[in-house]
Image (cartoon, each protein chain N blue to C red):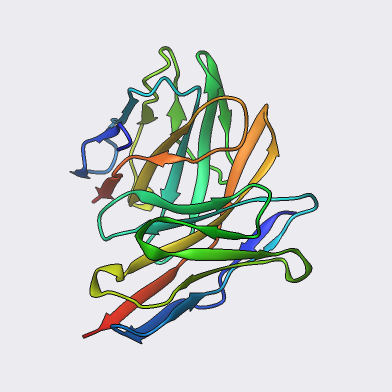
Length: 115
Length: 113
């Protein structure tokens, strides 16, 4: 069965430090992969996505992610974190065919940024 | 900017009441989804629709029902609310034709007393 694992429930970093959020997936075929961010009381906003091609993808707000098929991973990175990045981050896998398409989400990683 | 709306944003209601959570999108998307999200937890798919008159139950069993009479509208109804229904409900949509970015509404936080 398809699944997404985000091993870190909480992460705390200092402003200006680098960030890496981990995501591992289980899926039989080539996955569609997403990272979303959720601010308190809000819906989810797409940061970036991977469908095919270059395994390093750039997203909004200075985020990037690298797809590593051999490790079944899609880790999110940012070289220098800003206080406004404090939020919850969700990794997701898109599974199925065009006719029956569903998304599977990880449990999320809550990011705290210290001033 | 995604144009997907949910109302109400917050709802506190007593046990046994019937409620409808509204979700509308102006993007003409065929696929729409309802998720239930508890604090600190992942999103659980409870309903989805691939177009008008198409609705399916999701992976998480839910006592709610949905309808899709118009492309832009995907309301969720609870016939008799219970405290176990207390949660955040998120609506999302994507364009037809397969994988793509899900656009999310701001969510409805439901509390059943």
